Amino acid sequence: MNVLDSELVVGALRNEGYELTDDIKQADTVLFNTCSVREHAEHKIYSQLGRMKFSKRYRPNQVIGVMGCMAQKDQKKIFERAPHVDIVVGTGQLGEIPELVDQARSNRRRSLAVSLGRRDGSRNQVAQSFESYDPLRDPEMRPSPFQAYVRIMIGCDKFCTYCVVPTTRGPEQSRPPSHIASEVRTLAGQGVKEVTLLGQTVNSYKHTEDGQLYRLSELLELIHDTDGIERIKFVTNYPRDMTVDLLEAVRDLKKVSRYLHVPAQSGCNEMLKAMKRGYTVEEYREMMERINSIVPRAAVSSDFIVGFCGETDEAFEKSMDLIRECRFKNSFIFKYSARPGTKADDMMPDDIPEDVKRERNNRMLDLQNMISEEDNAEFIGEQVEVLVEGPSKQAIKSGEADGDALKTQLVGRTDCDRIVVFEGNPRLAGSLTNVEVHDCTATTLIGSIVTREVQHGSGELLPILS
Ligand code: SF4
Image 1 (cartoon, rainbow, N blue to C red):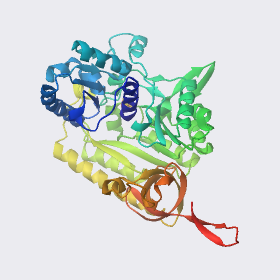
Image 2: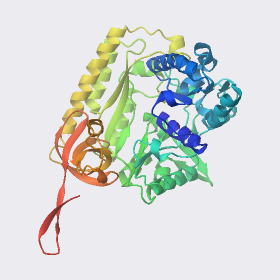
Image 3: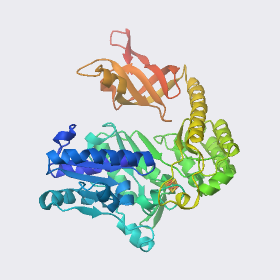
């Protein structure tokens, strides 16, 4: 979500004549896009802001801004801790940034633009104060020219006890399907092959337009036939909304990736209740059975929090059991970090010592890595279809991909989101290519491009790169 917000803000500023620079010393405007999900991310921003104080001494006209979740959460506190900051802009006011930057430069006026708190008005008033921001796109800011994020909803109404998102991103609001379909068409026209639909609980998407109710399954159907789009993904899912109609859409619509990220957070009912996740571990298991029976070989990934308030050894072991049983493709594992303003922070002691959290985190990571590597090994000898993203990070770092290299290490993903590296011509970026897998790690399949043979005019069989 933050990557997309950055793309949109850069697009809007470029439209006003701004240019990006890699050198922060040259920048006359510096904007920090921030995350509040974990305490560590916030500390990093405050220490970066501290360093900016010196930069401003040498460039008094520099405009410094903080945007995103931390801006919505900390508001004036940011000016108190970093008085050299000029603008603080929440997630619901990103559209105002070009104007606020201009004002800060011309009047040296400090601005705070944030949405209402969840208790500061009716649901409608609060929702209106969080505006979905989906204007100009900027191809240069995308993960790759062939991939783009598309926001289909904002906010969240689930109120898990540990989470700041319902406060920082506001009430759950779905965008009209016609707007989404038109954005996907525009992106396809710009050469995008893969779109990832975004929402905090993307499968809770619901919007009525022209008398028709669109859920995520209907939305997928609506955009499926967009010319030029080869792949459609969606993240992140809420377990209770993983419904049969959605799974059938994943099964039946060829371009929809068979990759489902469905955070479990814990395998213990007492913890799930304390987190207010809204389901039991038995219901999560039933959901996994539903996925496996409707979309066989779907890749499912998950999130887990270790060391949540009151998590006993036994409760932690239940999460480990769930990972063993579900054999997730991968899991994002987080040590619990208390977030001010959440119910868990207000009402539950953060009572698991840091070393216990760390040890549980490491054990869970080891287990998940072992499973991921075993599952990846099953692909050895198989051919997989890969959407090529471009040169791998390693090739870029070593300079191998510079200039007109005819062959370099490329990276791409299968339709179940497995990362694949292989040698090939950088011009394959953006195309679908068959790769035979001959090795793997826990995170990556390693292979080579499948060559096919074509009948040449002379009758001679020539191998060509697919
Ligand atoms: S569903 Fe996700 S975004 Fe919403 S409150 Fe729970 S953890 Fe946060």
